[in-house]
Image (cartoon, rainbow, N blue to C red; front, side):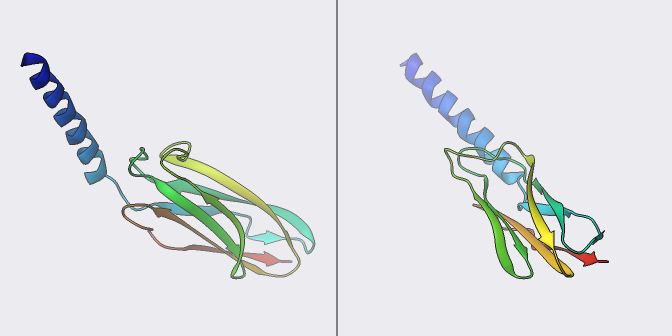
Amino acid sequence: MKTRSVYVGMIGVFFLLLYTSVAWANKSSVAIEAPNQAAKGSEVVVRLNVSHSANNFIHYTDWVVVKADGEEIARWEYSALDKPEGEKFTKQVKITVDKDVEIEAQSHCNMHGSAGISKRIIFVK
């Protein structure tokens, strides 16, 4: 009987801790790092700094996407068994710029959604 009470107590503590981390969680957000200007025809690196608290097997960033002028150029998808590297992680893509280009990026939490789309313009000089 004591053993059963211990197991029930341990399970209760587990769910309390799990619930607490979810309660402190936020929407997944992404910040774009890219140069303001680039020479025509040059390749630039676009870094996406993704932030989301409480990445665990139930609650995590489930996707990150980046677009150039409205066209998807990269996507990363995650699952409970293949979670992001941490609460803060970076992804990057390289693009060749021939004209001014608008970069959009968004990340999404499987429980709380997205903090919105981040935008950045790279001007060709």
